[in-house]
Image 1 (tube, rainbow, N blue to C red):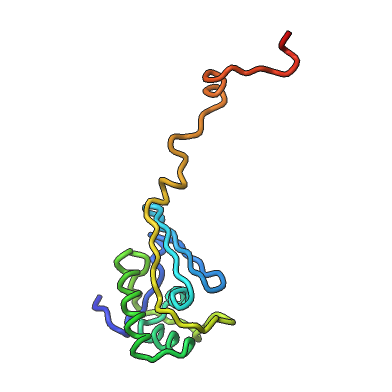
Image 2: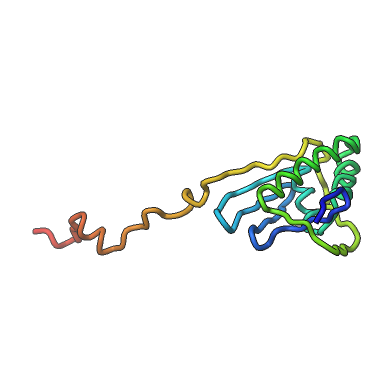
Length: 151
């Protein structure tokens, strides 16, 4: 599929899960545990990707919502879309038929170019490696003194 400003994008549900809360987007790769975050305009972009909007629609919404020059919004959104595609967080969607555009309520309206924060190695941080020892392993490695058993 040839990508253009009219290409619609959606979340790559086979590779990741994401959620927008307030003005923060949190995305986790189901493949390698990489954690991604975006705030402000980036969270708006993610919420519009969830609605399967085109790059042009997303850039237009960012320009209007944050009162930023359309050319700046377009360049920033294009760069972010490229990053999201490279990380396999989004995919091009054929025949997207989204209902009316839904924008989040009460934004800060302070524009900062959207940026994808990437935290690799989270799988190792969150995993219990080595696994927590079993109770039997603990008992073998340290003497246990029960109250009232010492003379």
